[in-house]
Length: 253
Ligand SMILES: NC(=O)C1=CN([C@@H]2O[C@H](COP(=O)(O)OP(=O)(O)OC[C@H]3O[C@@H](n4cnc5c(N)ncnc54)[C@H](OP(=O)(O)O)[C@@H]3O)[C@@H](O)[C@H]2O)C=CC1
Ligand SMILES: O=CCS(=O)(=O)O
Image 1 (cartoon, rainbow, N blue to C red):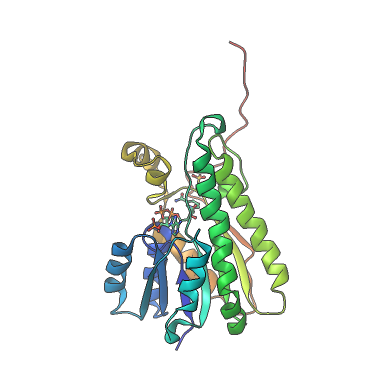
Image 2 (image 1 turned 180 degrees about the vertical axis):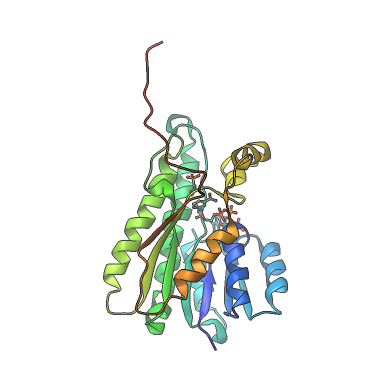
């Protein structure tokens, strides 16, 4: 049987699309997220294609992460691909207007959550060895500053550097590590960032062609199924209709 693909944040967006993409190819899946009803629906949808184990999980809860990994059923214990996808942005306002709690939530999820899951699954990934992959979902925001990105962009800069450093430490194990850094993609991301403002989300994605969750899932599948001697260090991917912001200048008057 193939090694499992463990996906965090499988209830929506990139993670949900990745579950479909890997199921199509018959990989056994461990799907996690906080919204149980969505996990159950996904399991039902995909179980004709592959074996699916679901676990309700908040990645920021270190104890819960370890428990989910320790209690994986026997047939899901050989995790060969980890997709560290769970994450979020909050508070698109300037830093000086933001609630401290929103900064903490982004750090707890995008940084601590990602390291919690990585730490818990490293033994399995190393046991699989050649061909195993860790795909960490970063962002263009980790590289390119913009107003309102503050802690979000900083968490994604962490994801990039952690990915590179992890790759150094895993030298010789066969485990690959990639920082997958997308730009604008239409998912529930903006709805979450604006705390439920559907109009703001529609306005951001309207009148242009953002990437889709399926576009990013295809990148994940490509990275994970490359020949075992190849490591993609970083992928930065944007829609054609998005470029970097220009320099801003504060003027009198
Ligand atoms: N959309 C975009 O433009 C871009 C997004 N990204 C990144 O991609 C990743 C996926 O986002 P995207 O699919 O767009 O957004 P969505 O909001 O559609 O999906 C986010 C997923 O993360 C999960 N999640 C959030 N917090 C937690 C938590 N504490 N514990 C477990 N799961 C959690 C959610 O599940 P649940 O709520 O059920 O727990 C959900 O499944 C994120 O890391 C995001 O930062 C990067 C670049 C661009
Ligand atoms: O990570 C998400 C892309 S953006 O909203 O920062 O451009």
